[in-house]
Length: 102
Image 1 (cartoon, rainbow, N blue to C red):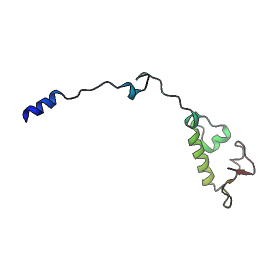
Image 2: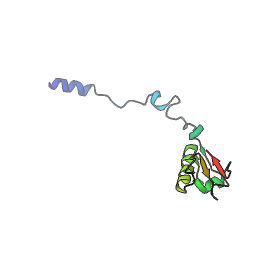
Image 3: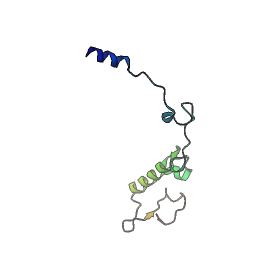
């Protein structure tokens, strides 16, 4: 039994270098991947910045914050939930009408 323990210790694995599969095709020195589509960071306009803030955000996070603002201020029509009633802060934003259809 002592011999088996010794054999296991002899063949113990050491630290292995990172494989290309784990580090990506370019290896460890690769630049960070560019985010695109809905994950791309964008800087909001001043009108939209009044609602979501002025820091660069992903499009998904921006959409979440606009919906949070709409729900917090009860701007969604109770009867037709596709309609948004634009208040003074939301009116200067893009494509707003008196009754915005979602």
